[in-house]
Length: 412
Image 1 (cartoon, rainbow, N blue to C red):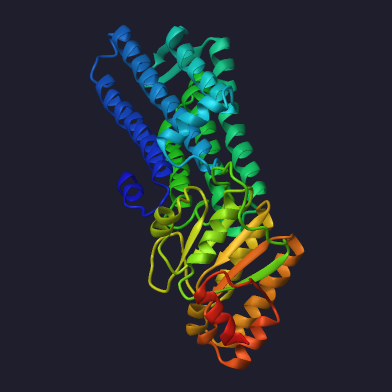
Image 2: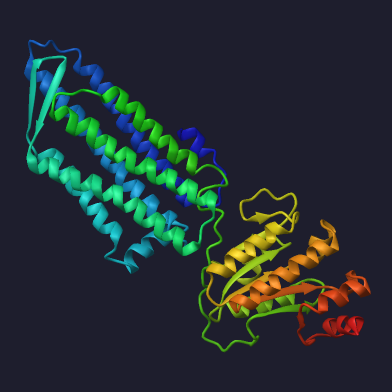
C-alpha cells in the first residue's frame, strides 16, 4: 500500500505526503502490535503478571499509533478540502490565520484520548486464557468514544461541505464517500475490536484487523492517480493589486482578442484576476510557463494538449471536455473570467462546426452567469465565412497595437 501511494502521480504532493505518512503510522501500529503479540506468547501462563503487562503494553503502543494516524488523517482532511493549502508553509499559515479552528479542537480530542490511555488503569482477567478480558474505566470508555465520534463526524463534515462548495461531479462524490467510509469505518472498528469487545471477553481482533485494512484500502483506492478532488477546478483569487485595473470589460460577454501569440489576452486576464475576478486559464502554453511569465500563483491553469499527461491538462477532442471544465468553473466561481487560448488548435483537432457549437454554448453560459470569456484568435487562420460566423458570437476588442490593427484590417 505504501509503495502504491508513493508511485501515484499527482500535482497535489503535499496532500499525498500527508496521506503517505498517515499510512506509515498505521503500518507502524500493525507491525508493533504483531511483534508484541508474538512476544507475549512466550511467557508462561504461570507468570500472569508478565503476561498482563505485555498485553497492556501491546494495547498502549497500538493505540498511540492509531491516534497518531487519526491526527495525521485529520490533517489530510483539512488539506484535501482547503484549496489554498498546497504546501507545508500554506498549512502553517492557515493554522495561524484561522486559529482557533475545527482541526485544533479535533487534535485536542485525539491528544486527550492518548493521555487517557496512559493514565487509566486496566483490569485484566486471564482466568480463561487464551481468552483475555480487559476491563476499562468508565471515563476511559467515554473519552475514547468521544474521540471516535469526533473522527467519524469530522470527515463527513469537511468533505461534504467542500463538495457542496465546489459542485463536485459524480466521480468525485463517489471517491469522497469511499474515503468517508474508510476513515469512519476504521475508527469505529478500532473502538469495537480493541476496546468494547475485549471489555466483554470477546476476541475478534484477527477478523477485525482484516476488515480495518480493507477500509484503509478504500481510502487508498479513492485517492488513486487522477481521482479524488484533483479533477475539481477550484476558483481561487490571486493577490489583489493596489493599482486601478487597466481593463474594464462588461460582464456576460465573450470577447475575441485579435492577435497571433496570445500575449495581450494574458495581460488582460492577469489584470482582471488581480483586481477581484476569479480566473481559469486554458492555454496551449504549459502552466509552469504562464505562472512564471505572468506571476499567477493560485489561478487554475489547464494545459490544452493532446499528449500532455499531467492532471492539469485537458485534451482538445472532443471539445465537450473543454466545455465541461469551463462550465463547472463558471458555475462555482465568483466574478468568473475564463481565458480560452487555443481556439485554432481546437479546430485543428475537431471540425469547425463542433467548435463553433462549443462557442455557442459557452456564449450562453457566460451570459447566464454574468461571466467573461476571453478568446484570442488569429483571423487569418479562418476562411471568410468561418470568421463571419465567429464574429456573430463574440465582441471584438479595439486594436491597441500595430499587429492588432493589421489583424483588424484583415477582418474588414
